[in-house]
Length: 152
Image (tube, helix red, strand yellow):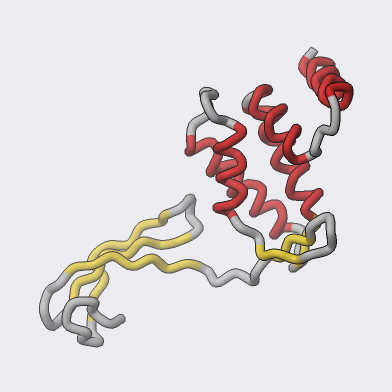
């Protein structure tokens, strides 16, 4: 590992610990030459997960894009960012568990809505209204009725 300060190719590891829910390892290092300390992260290099959209286009799976959508759905709701990150992690883990390099955007949306429904009903309806592109009030009412029946 090259030292970012002096570019010497000799460092020693001072401390290692799991990070990002065990998905990476955080290492504190020290340069053997100049004693500069710095942090590195080691992660498993994963095969890109491709999402096939409704129109047939393909796009790389983006945790950030999904998290932004969940944050928008949960605005002014009592849902923590940590909870939303756990949802994204769980959905990504489940999608990778399918053992395929390509997944349908429909599957991604359904998994997200399934988890949101367990967390917050209002956030679920907000997300569903965008994801399912409710065209009129009747579709919206139908979704609310199904949600109320499920919660009884």
